[in-house]
Length: 404
Image (cartoon, rainbow, N blue to C red; front, top):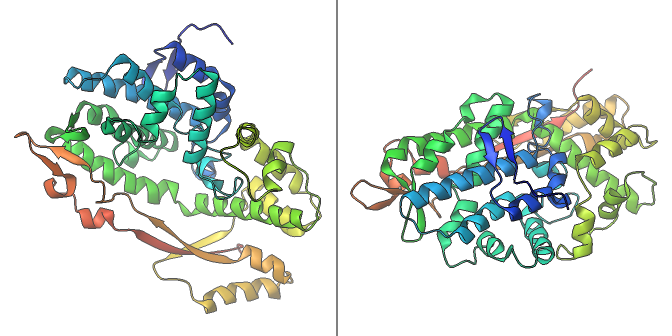
């Protein structure tokens, strides 16, 4: 273990970030956490926004910083939070994304089939808790929403959590999409706690309205941008195709860590051995595999890989209604007429839908009026239309190779 010096880190978003305890420093230095340096925060979005190359590591540090600022704000407002609870909140938010795999959300559930990063994050926290002699127990209780003070879990995971306050601002900064540039510190200054739930003071209403609008704009303009989305779909299809041909006995080279997951469909996410294996995976395993697969004798795998490496992506069309069988078949026939096999055509022409819901009325953001009453955001804001923002927006897409 390295000498503990409790460093001050320089972040381009917030300036200096202090690591405030030995436990936080030791967690930050742990290989499980250092791996996040090699996990892209925004998947393949850098193919659209060249600056979007920041990592989960940076996001986790930024979230920890904002959590500390939030606790300090609440303490000034006479919300009782002990030093033990403050550290536990910082640990919980620092490790909330530790279970992310290569390219974050882009191929989540595809490498480790059917398992999301939240479950894996909890598994890693449990492993670290054993290693650190139970010092993470309170943080795990808060993360899993088992702690008696429920507002603390809301700070880690809710519609107005510290996670979102960092990633919207950070992703906006690195992509240059200024529409997502929220005022995180202003929102934090307006937070309070009433009856064990997080509330926003009335003076912060405009900042919250901006926060929700920014989230919607970032989803459709950045996170679900059709070029970035088609790249992520192509990568998912590549992983699924490799898994299929491996079962057929086709030899496909890759790192041992990646092969462990590609060759097995059912793995126990609670197994320490499986988690340890997963902790060795990062974006580099995928890039190394793609560089090898571009020369594979299987034309489909080679084409998938070359397209991703060279940004020779598919064309994607969006529309409100599902694409008809006629529209899909028309695209397939054009490829078939060009001499491509039926299997190739099936893999390179596909249709589905994406959806986005930026707000839900089920667990609404609460506003504390100047008179001391608590209201749901949609009942208090004259601008915010709960039905508009809580409606699931759906777009249907059709992907196919560009015409040469």
